Image 1: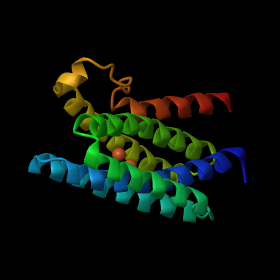
Image 2: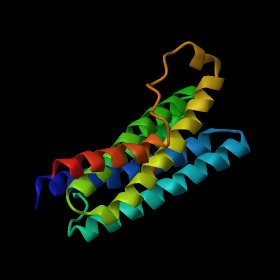
Image 3: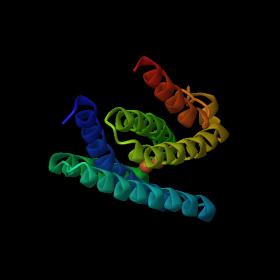
Length: 182
Ligand SMILES: [Fe+2]
Ligand SMILES: [Fe+2]
């Protein structure tokens, strides 16, 4: 296995189990909000995290790898804890935590796409970039909510992600640079 493929498998295992934690957390989050529209929107985000998990499993299988049992256990404990915390955590903290987490997910899938390309699995790049874009949408959703809250004007918000279209552009540039080096 090449170094890039090795790193890709590690990242996909993390993402696979991380999506489980996120989906559990959103179950609690959706239960904790009163506004039916926001509830439905968080449920939709939860469904998208389950889809991401299924995609990650398919990619792992295509690479002849399996999920990590330890990460599965760890992330399900974390996800269920966050889910329970949402009941007592008020409105703001779960929204803020979700936005910050989604911000790091954008980077995770973008890096995975770069690794897939470097490992000779160009066929995996589109789905990884699509997942990065969906995480970008999730991040914007929670950012909007946090900014609209009075507390959001008092506490510093996590760093803004680069524009959505730069997710694909960045990888194209990387591919061209790699191509010009060979
Ligand atoms: Fe996701
Ligand atoms: Fe997400």
